[in-house]
Image: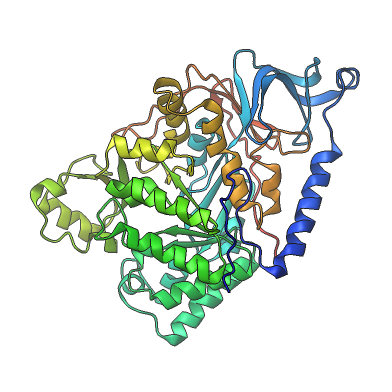
Length: 506
């Protein structure tokens, strides 16, 4: 008998299939979340006037996709959380006048690969208050969190990664993604068992989910991946997947990789999130989004994301370029060496591939990207990296570019719909495994005071492919757990209020 239920999933609620063993846990989670949200209610005018808050954001257009609130309100923050949303004036140690500005939940970025905390200031200037390394993940979850304690301007979380664990087990020399045996050799029975043990251990240590860079591990068998999905399902963890074979560097059959992870989800029960559908799908973006919608309508818990740029970026020494030994010269010209900004030739391609490093891939079109960004199923996520050395403008401008281009300039998205893609939808993707996320991505009494205050008429990405390390503009204030990390449009030096976002340890 199928474990799936029929009917269309509502994007405003979780579409997770609920095994019988998880129903009680889910109900307890909802009860706790409801109690927290109800603990501090919107104050009546008289009571609100008598309160003193750490921070008051006054006279702003408060927009909350979860409740649909879109009105001028005053927001009172105390002890790192929103305490009240009021029509009456509020008193606080600091009052931020947000007249003419939008006040929204801080943006949640489900796709980030940075390791240098300074790079997260670029995220903060882009409106991001919580960032996650989920597509690739890491092998050592405890170490990853320990390295960031007290050093992060924004909140942070990580997945345990199938590819990094596979690299560790198979002694692969690659940096970030496999470059040797972990990409090109099947794992034997002993190695497969060790890979699954590594994923299991990471989940017990609070990993947010399980990352699968399947495009970078083509030798991993379907059985190996299905077994890893089963481990994820046992821990109510989502699988965050770069689908097999699909990338900006090319693919023979883009549907094949998507259908594989839908099948793994159907068999295992693990929810699945497909990374950067804009670059994975390319010319097939409409077809693949249709497939995702049809799978959701039949009870598969699948979501996806997109970033608003026509170029991708990855490691030149990775498996993705194994087939590029003798391409037409015009194909090499689509590649841009990040370190120098030069477009490649056949000769420089082979030289830099032997050296190893990041390359931009100019292979998509604006029409395809627009279709992905405005589609109702997609969230916004950057796939960003550290900005030093130079990387990709998406590391600094993904969210502001979406607001500037697709909301303000093209009016292809409403502001509320864009905010939903950046806040509520990613929070909902994570909250079943990480209850903390039920109190982020929203503005309501009792939620964390992760807030952005921005000028919708001036918000703008500034980073380019040649100059990617340029702060976005228009974010006037960004608060993380009630503390200001962007103040008056400037980064606050040595402000590190970011907290670890982690599943319960087992």
